Length: 192
Image 1 (cartoon, rainbow, N blue to C red):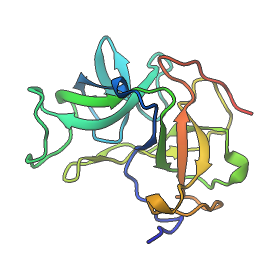
Image 2: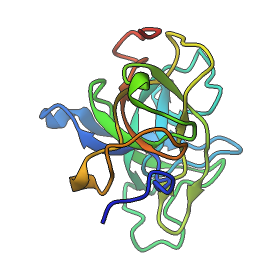
Image 3: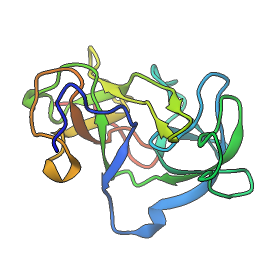
């Protein structure tokens, strides 16, 4: 069943394609910020060897590194049977991160988006997480002006039927497929 373009779920970033090289997923120690947890689907940065949350209005000194594909305890055990399946605000743990600079993710775009936005940058907006499901609430929005520091670029509108979406555009809340624009291992570009 296809999702309405205005009800694409806020699940953070969901991996749809990446390089076939399995070495692009690794475990790292993680530290949530005082007011932002870390969950599966979160865009994150690497700071002094520790994964930290990426945030809306991203600090230019924190260069994006990847997306969390799994959250673990500090001892490296999955949170599957835990009540809370996230690293809570100001907490610590471990995360599995896909840090492939060319991976593609589907994410909700909070502003109206259409074919003319393909190839243009987007930035993080919403944050937070669902502790019960362990999923991120991160989403993106189209910035007023493009910058090399903008975290992602739109590759396509909402994904095709195999992912439950429709290839539509126009309204806010559509899913979009994005790829890193600015990444620790790749320089950003401002747009078209």
